[in-house]
Image 1: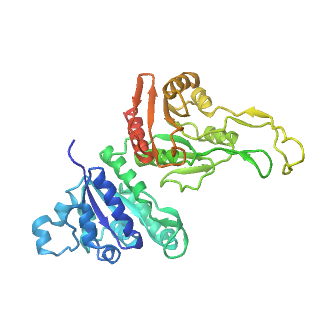
Image 2: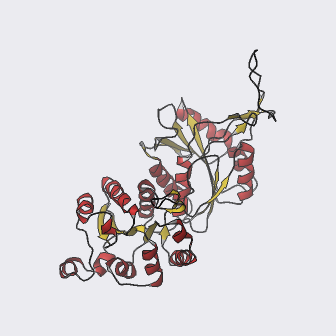
Image 3: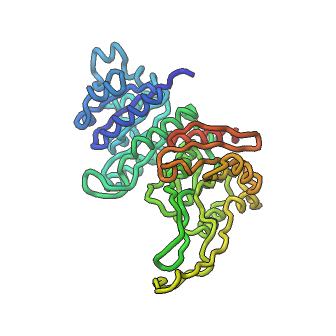
Length: 397
């Protein structure tokens, strides 16, 4: 396969420092990076550093005789498979939305015939301003894709939406776009993704839960959205921000998660990644259970609803139902048995006895289908998400 190429436009904002790590991740993955550094961006990162990491020349000036002779803005705009703007400042978004072309970055965006992915970064008030939201809608209507912004603390001291997505998340979105050739093969499809742990109350203070971080499910939701799907993410308690373009429904218990999934039907795709508690207390104490001098209190458990099995048998069953299996032993045998027992189409299984898998950033999975078993190498959870999303897209030609 020919080497993939990225044209990276670095806007002016403190988040520009993240583009250095993004560039490193792309080069490590074998993706060529050609940077355009805006004058404002150069206030935060140097052309020397960016050039060293990209292993390519950095372009900055629209009216440079040398640059125009070697690689003019028209050629720059069409020399890559994907144009990435990170950080996409309010100024760059406004210029692109209104067709302004007063510098190399904006002129290149206007001249390109390639897919464009933006990673916005700005103060929360700037992001929420009606003008920025209007520009966002215009750019989306023009076919521009977005990753982020995240909700969290910012360098300006404020907190809220506007924080640029982390380099790993932008990398995942880039790789998903390259995998699909910039196309959105799941456009018009509806997907349900469950993620994170569930929480089953014992009393107002205590609960039954597990170590799931939600990272894998959130990555899958984002990867499906990047391919055009309308995604409902049904999430147990996590500290993760919802991927851009995803509708998140927050729940706690398994019963609430099932109800949210059923409310999201009909759907074309269901990916049940959440680590759902198998049991819950038969009764929930209305007061904190006090520690006495005798034996600990007995907690009677009852079985929780099986969300994967219910969705697999629902009369509005999605066309593709995928379950996840976290196992500590006999991984492939247990996954095949679960596939038959649940009535779903695929099972993605991983060995959680490996230290750092639950709550970590990497995963090693096997994909079990009626056609056989695929063993995937250990990779970042974002890469697992991209690969799975690409496989899902192939089921909907």
